[in-house]
Length: 237
Image (cartoon, rainbow, N blue to C red):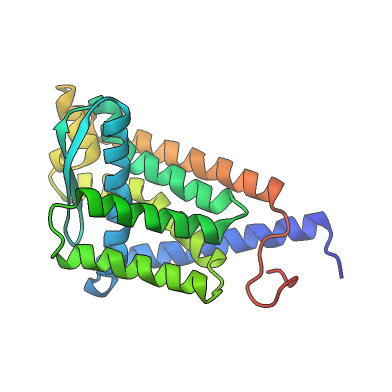
């Protein structure tokens, strides 16, 4: 039985809201949990990879990347264009998340992202013997094994894409409960010599993230109206 376009679009919107809902629950109730640490560090590794890529693309060099249970640090050997590098962590992650939401090839895109992150960490990680680095390898391995076993990664990819959106929320949160200078927005504001701009920069990154996700959803509805299977083939959510 063929669903009408409006019906399919409605179902796709429900699916997207379901992905966002699960991501929101994970972020609110589990993000700070020690049991969520390996997954959280996987997201941090994506964030720091975006800083590193921006550094390289703007003429700088990367000395190392460090990870801990909640945050990370990209140490440049030579600075790139600091304003671009500063915002690249959250906005780069948002672009990756938006792509995971919009693309038809969600499972393969998630596998490629995971392998890229693991290779990037292998090159630049400051120590191979930390629990955080081992956690990243475990998450990457689980994603690759799931793909080999033909596990449905499309839905998981959508949740991961949605979770990446909350990175910009994290910067605002860090501003409110931690030392502003330690946030990406705070680092940029201090570089500009205007610490008072920390919150406006943080909100700017959040607004851009929302725009990215709006465009990603519109693209998803336009170019992938049938969605993807959560169970048997040809049976859509």
